[in-house]
Amino acid sequence: MAAELPSKLKPAARVAGQKQDVWSIINEAAAASPKQPIVNMGQGFFGYNPPPFIINAAKDALNRVDCNQYSPTKGRPRLKKAIADAYTPFWSHKLDPDTEVTITTGANEGMLSAFMAFIEPGDEVIIFEPFFDQYISNIEMPGGKIVYVPLSPPRDGATRTCSSAEWTVDFEKLEKAITPKTKMVVINTPHNPVGKVFSKEELQRIGDICVKNEIIILSDEVYDRLYYVPFTRIATLSPEIERLTLTVGSAGKNFYATGWRVGWLMGPPHLIKYVSAAHTRICYSSVSPLQEACAVGWLSFLSFFPL
Image (cartoon, rainbow, N blue to C red):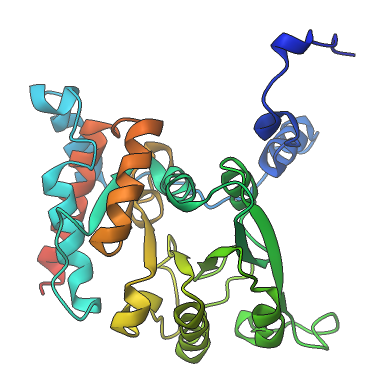
């Protein structure tokens, strides 16, 4: 049993009360299994490398002086412009890479930066359960309180194989969950772990509720290139919804490079500037050569799918 720490050496409550994360438990159990190899169906990482041209771009970047030094805190201009160009077709206007895009050290740190930027102790954040487990620690770190709203499976879901689209939002419970302390709603589409792609109608209702109550929307869209049904980005539904929305993206999911830890947030300047400020205080800047390689990845994408 670990020795009790003297009172002056005790950790802060924000970390002392956190339990072991589910991934550590799963990975330790998998490593201890007598049957090997174990296929991990839980985490969103890949069993193969990024495309060779992206790996070569990372190698080339390592030979450049500027790519071995600090990048701008908001991200390398080439990568921000490539992301803005790639996502502009979905928006109602051309995204400004300088004010509407910020690069983070993975999508997870980007979400932490968003919570650190806007959540004060006691503020409430609504998440739909089941959910990506990192939301808990990220929200609790700045003192936020999590409010759970369930995604409901079909009534006979225990007796048959059902589509993820059959999981539904209980809008009555969502509206009842909102209080004067509600600061943010987190959406994850395509959803981890259910796989549900929220419909345009569902997103419109969520967006309208947030507009009515002046609630920030954090839309975790890291799986935005992995879907088989029509996919809607909530920020694109109306100017009123866009004004409240931060959209999260991930190079790890787009380019099969989860270990590179390159992510981004997109949103209106009045939100992005505070996410950037929080990111600067958490990480300062993100990994330079891997940002450059991701820029090459997006530029290649744009060459195949021109605007």
